[in-house]
View 1 (cartoon, rainbow, N blue to C red):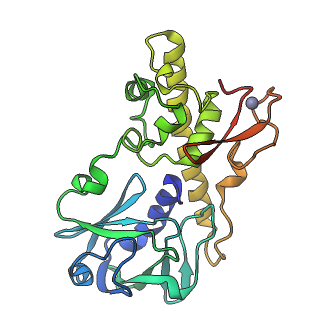
View 2: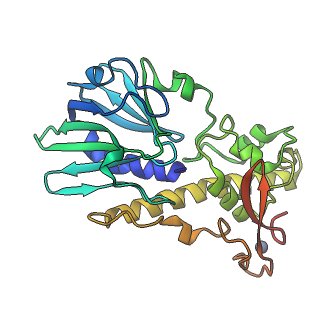
Length: 296
Ligand SMILES: [Zn+2]
């Protein structure tokens, strides 16, 4: 499943094509993806100008002049392909390769830019766990988005806020960090990476870094910084690869080469001076990668 940095990279790739463009025609080639398309889906989009393309957690929000907002989720295997007269590209680099098979092209947006350049933005999704829904008012008030926690990007997530979110929680630290009601868009890969950067065990009780003491304060600050930096680094990696990403074949993921612990079971821990090895344990049915020597 794409994680937040991939979705943000997709957003940045689509933004120059979508923002300001007018939707000339929409093809929905089947009645549903994960959910049925909303009533009058194509009809309500046709003729609208896209004013902004935003992101909340792993949802893309396409804002239309006069409303509604189109909320898009990539699901497990969804991607957007941009096609112009002489070029085609799929923004975002993913841990798993994206499909190019036209039989999985489910939605096609035919667009015209303010400079009268025509393009098509195609949503391809072999497994069809993606979806598109309308929000009639503010996107943040839509039931899909209303309960989401704080974004792990930007500076809002600091040690004090993280401590207040984790205070009193008895669940393992990793499980608490995956709770979308606390922090939105943080997934399995980057939680493992952030916990390694912060030197904290995924198994420790979440509330232990929310105490009043100096040590807990230092740990919550270290973890907040690790979460922000791991996400920012991943977005930067996606962004930089995007620049040389014209006419390529959508090669395998970009950032796993710089994962310190994720998918590295048995390898030496990359923490300087640490002689431990990366272990894989299963927590709540998901793989966790960590070093028991330097993560306490
Ligand atoms: Zn280690």
